[in-house]
Length: 214
Ligand code: B1M
Image (cartoon, rainbow, N blue to C red):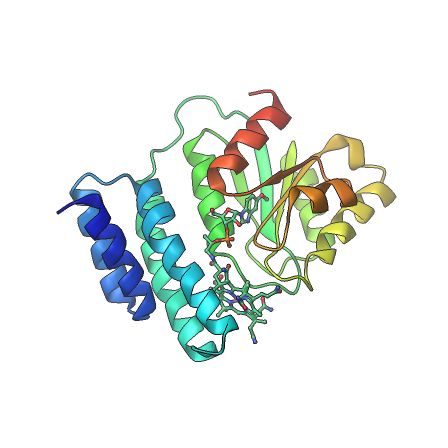
C-alpha cells in the first residue's frame, strides 16, 4: 500500500469520526514503515482541519467535532508514541500548556511529543491553564522556556496575561516565551512581546533550539 493510501484512509477515518479506524490505520501505516510525523502531517492533521472547515460552514455540528477530535486523539497517541525517545542529556527544560479557557490540546500534545523526541525535558501542564500555573511550574522545575498554545481568538489574550504576570513578578528576562496554535501568528507574537512563534511541531522544535542555543 502506498503512503498516500494511508493518508487518504487517515482523513476518511477522521471524517467518519471513528476512533477505532483511526488508531487502526495509524498502527498499520507505522508497521508498513510510514514515518509517524508524515502520518500526522499528511493524513490526520488535514483530516481534522477539514472537520474544522465543515464545522465553520455548518455542515457538521459540535457532537461530530467532539467525536472527530476523539478519533484524532487516538491516532495522535499512536503516532506520538512512535516518535523516537530523545537520547542522552536533556537539552533544556520546557513548561508548556494550553491557556485558560481553551480546551484544544491535540496540537499542543504533538508539540510535546516532538520536543521530547528531540531531547527536551518537557512538563506538560495540559489544557485550560491559568497564567500563574505556567509561572509557578516554570519556577518549580527550573525551566528555560514557557510555551503557550491557544486556538481560539478569544483565548489568545491569555498569552498576554502570562507575559504580564511574568513582568509583574520581575521574571520576564528569566524565560524564553514561545506561542503557537491556530490563532497565533508571528505578528501576534511580535505584538505581545513573545520571543518566538511556531507554526507547527517541527517549527516548535526549531524555534526552541534557537531560543536555547541548541
Ligand atoms: Co474547536 N475550534 N471549538 N474544538 N476546533 C477550532 C479551533 C475552530 C477554528 C473551528 C472552526 O470554526 N473552523 C474554531 C475557533 C474559531 C476562532 O476562535 N477563530 C473552534 C471553535 C469555535 C470551538 C468551540 C467554541 C465550539 C463551540 O463550543 N461552539 C469550542 C471551544 C471549546 C474551548 O476551548 N473552550 C471548541 C471545541 C472543540 C472540541 C472540544 C470539539 C475539539 C478539541 C478537542 C481537543 O483538542 N482535545 C475541537 C477541535 C478538534 C477543533 C479543530 C477542528 C481542530 C483543532 C486541532 O486539533 N487541529 C479546529 C479547527 C482547525 O484547527 N482547523 C477547531 C489539529 C492540530 C494538530 O493542529 O492545534 O493547530 P493545531 O496544532 C498545530 C500547530 O498549531 C502548532 O503545532 C501543532 C502541530 O502541528 N502548535 C504549536 C499548536 N500549539 C503550539 C504551541 C507551540 C508551538 C506550536 O509552542 C508553545
